Structure formats: C-alpha cells, structure tokens
Image (tube, rainbow, N blue to C red; front, side, top):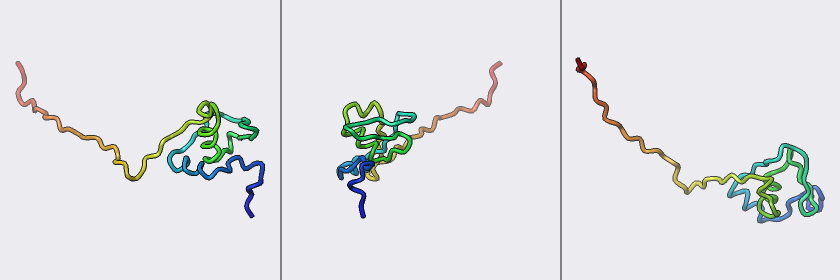
Length: 95
C-alpha cells in the first residue's frame, strides 16, 4: 500500500524528483518547522524531495533552503594546469 493520502507526505508531485536529480538541497534553518501552503516542513527531518519542493515551488523558498548544483557525468572535471617554472640554481655566491 502506498501512503499517497498521508497528510505528512508533503511532496506528491513527480516532477520534484527531477529537481533532486539535478541538485542537492540543504536547509538553512537550524530547527523547528515552517508551514508552506498549509503543509508543515520539519527542518531536522526534511527529505531532499521536501527541500526541493520548498526551494522550487514555494514563494521565498530560497530563504529557507540552499541549492547545491550537482555535476553531471558528462561535464569535464576541473583540472588545473600546472606550469613548471624554470628554477635557476644559484651555484655562485655574490661577493
């Protein structure tokens, strides 16, 4: 049995899963709960789907949740080019 009619199930939208595939979400709140559109989000136990719903679907959601973009496997990894500097040996001492 699914719990689709459970009132504690904040996120019922399938497109929210797309948001969680593209990014991770981190709460800015330390604790407690906040009501959005008549639904309560508990910050200590909020799932990625709930955080995505708050950030993407609710007004001023970015005040409560931070979005962290994920790198796709197709993107090139950031590589730093290391340039070898020519070092001169100081064989002679100045007098």
